[in-house]
Length: 118
Image (cartoon, rainbow, N blue to C red; front, top):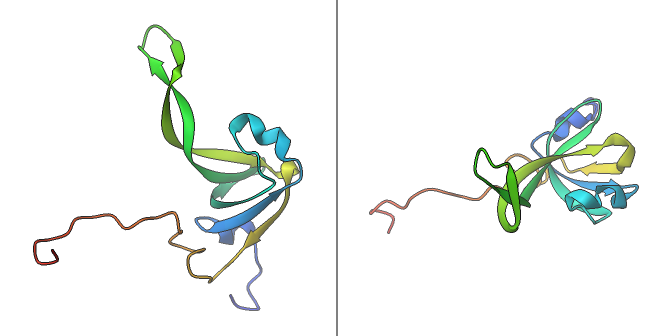
């Protein structure tokens, strides 16, 4: 990063950061219980910081008309969670550090082996 480049939260979008919360207990209802954690930044707005929340436990909905939720039946879903600015103590960004910038360490190699590679 150039000395002339001013750091803003916009530079952290799509990168992995460390988030430190002031009051982690306010996010316990959505499953965030740690004061400090790594997260991929998806975006930000005037309300807060949007981060990736992989493998969130989500109830499976049964039927389009019933409107019933069966808590015993759960599925894993990739979600986004908004961390309110007032709950965040600090965000640490690691520009240029391999594995913490684009592409994120959460990305895994996917694809197929050709017969030549096997």
